[in-house]
Amino acid sequence: MKLYNTATRKLETFKPLGDEVKIYTCGPTVYNFPHIGNYAAYTYWDLLVRTLKANGYQVKRVLNLTDVGHLVSDADEGEDKLEKGAAREGKSPFEIADFYSKVYLDNYKKLELLPADIIAKATDYIKDDMEAVDLMTKNGFTYETEDGIYYDTSKFPGYADFAKLDLAGLQAGARVEFSVEKRNATDFAVWKFIKPGEKHAMRWDYLGRPGYPGWHLECATIIHKELGEPIDIHTGGVDHIPVHHTNEIAETYAAYGKNLARFWLHCDFIMIDGQKISKSLGNTYTLEDLEEKGFTPMDYKMWLLSGHYQGTRNFTFDSLAAAKQRRLNWRNRIALCYQQDVVNEDGVYDRILEVLNENLNSAEAFAIIDNSVISFEDWKKIDELFGLRLIEDTPNVDEGIYKLIHEREDARAEKDFASSDGIRDELLERGIALHDTPDGAVWEYKK
Ligand code: AMP
Ligand code: ZN
Figure 1 (cartoon, rainbow, N blue to C red):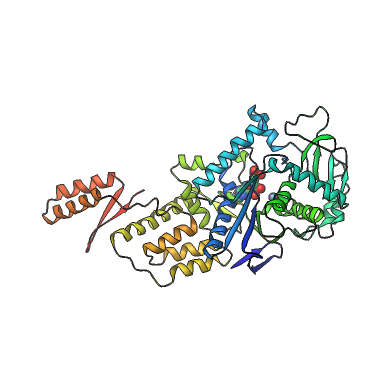
Figure 2: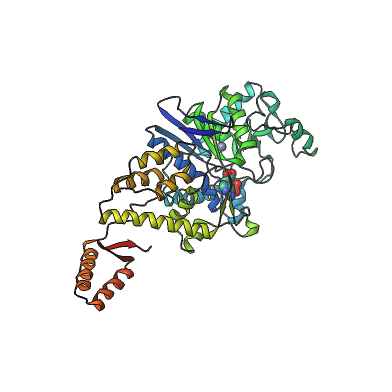
């Protein structure tokens, strides 16, 4: 299997180090309703896990839920997103985290995403965070300011490598008036102090003062505790490369002296009608918004997987309608398998897996599905490979329907067209359309 590794900027052959593939996925910050773009990464990484499993690998995947300490800016400034959610809704940040974690997890189910083996809440790893800061300090990587404990990025020689950062340019471009006394433009908080009088409901005592962990730290400590470095594959969005993932790598090096991950996969952003998704443009559609417009989460998943995870995708309602129709076509080909013996083209499933093994080329895999003759047995395998609920949503019709179809055939044979048309309409009302063929009537689903 080949995957594009962001760390080396190359398509590389992937093999796990041990018996199972250790995967970590940077999860959501649970402070607000997610828009459809927020599900892109999890859908693509679900395909990654399913493809690995189809290749016979055991997978152990950890997903974190950021329920603390993620500031609205990557630069250690601005409000904590959870505290912001709490202020917006007049609730505690813990209530906010519980509520939106559930929203995400419910929607993962709606999208038929395989549950991660471990779902790690950042707040369950605070002690581990403190131990990691202790280690980083012991190893000489941190300094203290009034604002918190900062990582001195000049101490990590490889800091710029992962994102190919231009450190001199960043330093020159940094505004003089940092809100904190940072030594280098790229330095970042591993632990933030809460000043006396400052409102911050989520707080833990460390070094004799109340505070909370910097955002990046949770991923480093969760990986250390639950998987052990180096993990095989670390996944995230392209926006994570220059700061979040760069800092996770730096922290892991400083605390544990280890390389964090062997392969890094990053997915690109979803645009809507050629524009970025943003509140000000009023296009922050949720899955529920799509449902109100008549599109199921499976239709959206079909749309996501009809393109590649790398490269910007442009979402339009027309293209979503096309994805919905494509799924209906596939379901009707499954329905045909109930009615006729469909014999497979040789090796069709293997060809599909082969293109997925080339850096998860689901677009090409879908084209193969469109253009091949596929048996029911292979549809089941395809359904498992993509998690599209094709079979579940395409039940064989009950005996009653078959009986009606036969009655209609008899009526037609007797040239009783009034009865035959009546039965056809009745079936249509039940979502079943009939097509007359030389071999008799064939039915298909209309929704
Ligand atoms: P946000 O809550 O907007 O910071 O988004 C959380 C994460 O969702 C980001 O770090 C991105 O990786 C991902 N994300 C946000 N917007 C999009 C988008 N339009 N397309 C794909 N992923 C997105
Ligand atoms: Zn992360």
